[in-house]
Image (tube, rainbow, N blue to C red; front, side, top):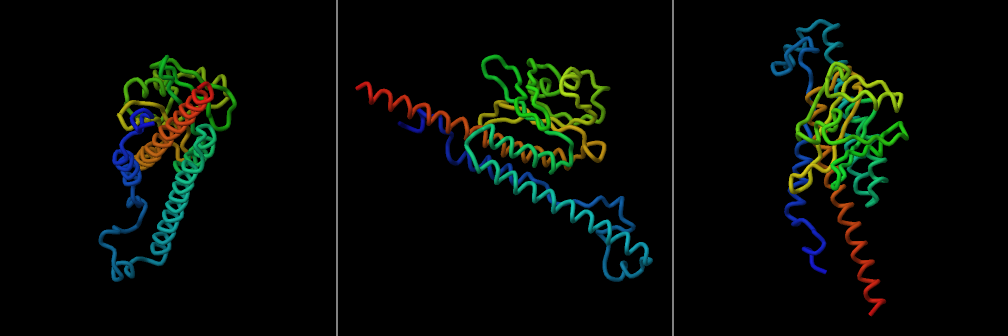
Amino acid sequence: MSDESLDIPPRAGRLRKITGALASIPAPEVDLAELPVDLARLDKKSFQKLSGDQQLELLDTLRRKLVDQQQRYLSLLKISSALGASFDRREFLEMTLQHVTDVVDARRSTLFLIDESTGNLHGTIAQGADTEIVLRPGQGIAGWVAETGRSLNIADAYNDPRFHSDVDEETGFQTRSVLCQPLRNADGRIIAVLQVLNSRSGTFSEEDENLLSAIGGQIAIALENSKLYRSIIRKNNQLVETTQQL
């Protein structure tokens, strides 16, 4: 069987997509507004001019930022490991979604897979709930993102007309802030929507958006690899059946 018959994307294209997703992970940033001094101008002399309390405040803020970034990058490593651990789509997504929730410091993550035949979104893997979520094209925040291809960062879901509150009623979950992004395959087609709910900080930041975009790129690759794997297995079974018939 040729690569073309199995719909295998060019190797170079896959590598570019993988490295692009990893490269888009943002470097650690420090919120200068929280610090008693401009870090860009901080040197030994200016540090010594700070009062003892200011020095302690500066060091404590930097320590907390460092711990937070270490936790985020540890979660990113776990996500990468989980995505490469199995070709079973449900298995690797169940492992991954918990880490997605951790890395953006949220309460819940849900991945909506798009049915190619109907366009419906199936939230079959929703962390913390067994309820299967099905949205029509354009329905709810995830449906809007899938239809338009645009990301959304919403501070108050119930004040947004696109929000579909029926899902909260079915799951018993109270949605507040929402960060939702489309996942595209190598051809640019939207194959899924990744959504995280209720930032523990109140609202999702631009850094959260960048992190979710990087993670989403890796998940999209894993979804395509899983699809390719199932295609290979199916074609191999067909080949075995044909051989037995001959």
